[in-house]
Image 1 (cartoon, one colour):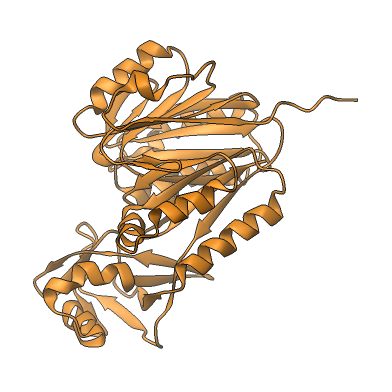
Image 2: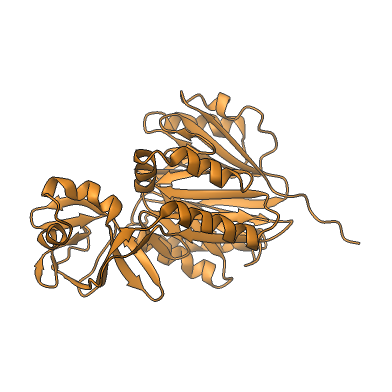
Length: 358
């Protein structure tokens, strides 16, 4: 009888004071390492990590991370050991021509014999997400491989010990002993029957000038009865949604720009938008956990990306620790707080995406 491969082991270590050696204490023979660092020590951490674990595939970005607690300013490391094959690499010039480097991804997919049932692509991006995801997905689509990822801070990412700007670092992880599956969680639902056609948009600056022909800022304020100052916190409760087939893409407001609204993702002229409101997020999280348990009675690891806005919302409502405890009940759970989440070919805001390893 054929022997099954060992289950994936996920390691998580953190240091609140940014001491990388402390964060990787007890880590032996990793197959892949993901580094989440802070803006002042990122370069140093990337060098140090490469010196400690030469030749081990790695990707990194600037951002907070968590398991049952959050490291806000320190450093965290998630690593996969046992039972995985992995490759890490980078697509450069993402704002101009990421497709120029797509061969790298195609070669890596071949090298680890990636397939739909057992392989995930995890990406850390420096920006220009929508373009990046379209490009990466052209290669992943041929094998139906899912993607989970997020945007780091500071416009920088790392791959295999080197730092890149205007790039996306990616890791391919193949579970040798079972399946993998990607999930996305949305804690918002449509509010009322509002339907808006966007116009006067600025694609480069992610600006919505008008909704149904009226100034976007005015429309948002009139419906929600908020002052201009309140708009940026109101978006935690009431972001916009863009209809995309059966899916709703969440669009957060970044800032007020005169009578227009600047967002965290692109909106184009003639896009149909709706207004969203916060659902019972504790119930939604429980539902996600139940769905994962039903799909995977045996889980070896969960890696998630939570939006910074979700982190703020949960923290302000005293729910963050409870949330991490609930997710921790799935088994080894760790993740990144991102500035935008990736799920397959979608770039979303205010969401959570995760990958579960059997």
